[in-house]
Amino acid sequence: MAGPDYDAEIKQLQATMHTIEQVLDIDAMRTEIADLGEQVAAPDLWDDQDNATRVTGRLSALQGELDRFTDLHGRVDDLGIMVEMAQEEGDADALAEAEAELGRLKKSVEALEVRTLLSGEYDAREAIITIRSGAGGVDAADFAEMLMRMYTRWAEQHKYPVEVYDVSYAEEAGIKSAEFAIHAPYAYGTLSVEAGTHRLVRISPFDNQGRRQTSFAAVEVVPVLEQTDEIEVDENDVRTDVFRSGGPGGQSVNTTDSAVRLTHIPTGIVVSCQNEKSQLQNKASAMVVLKAKLLAKKKAEEAALKKDLKGDVAAAWGDQMRNYVLNPYQMVKDLRTGHEVGNPQAVFDGDVDDFIEAGIRWRRGAEKAESN
Image (cartoon, rainbow, N blue to C red; front, side, top):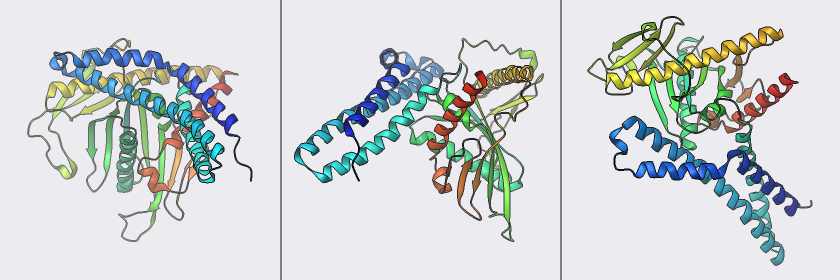
């Protein structure tokens, strides 16, 4: 079997990388990194801890993105040199390695190219994820905790900082709900395709008779707001309750009433935060989440109105979208894109990039179809 046309393949990779460089605006990214670096070097940076955390987190995330692009760009160039030397010397082993590297590069460049499809109003923002257990009792609570671990492992693999705001533990196992932020550029645009109802089918480890159990968990993804976003919250519309932080099994994490619960009375949205030592810090973090959810609600209502005006009766984005089957066979399948894999454990360990990329491409296709 003839080998790949390396010249054509490498030129295609280089062209794609050039497009990615323009869309991501790598020059502007370098400029922002330099500016943030000056801010980090300032001796009074930590006088304002919230700003310092934002600046250092943004710098870390942007530097990671730039390193990812630079590394890929260098690997594409190196591949051309590797192929040229191998062909000149007639080195079959080196050519075989070049072919393997070509396959790896295609996948990596394709994954980076997906980023260029994220052009929504809030796609560039960081993300706040809420996971809630649904129908299925203790299995659903356990499933919700599995999903939380899946997304935090995904973030860790990409070196994205995770900030846990609140976890409500279930009595027997798992969690009732969890709220956490992923601090990375484009985290919202990337992870918003994960929003919806997730379904798990397995032999229940909590059933003495070993019966198969189906359970559900809901994933909600909203963007982190910036000061320029116009979301005003009337303090008279918010009820503030303070309580003692709790851990699994009713364990007390904090001996003071530092945890905060905010209830937005007009909408019924409830947000809790217990990750900080101080009540004021928890209230500030909870308000960040509340404003994000109010913005998401406003956008959802606007989108629903547009669909009503168009007479669109199709099921909305966010309905049941993925099945995780552990018995009688092993498979994870996305019901929107058709993408599936036969290794659920790898997915629960954070290997969800292929599902996310397929979801982003599927959404872009749906948006194009809707606009026609």
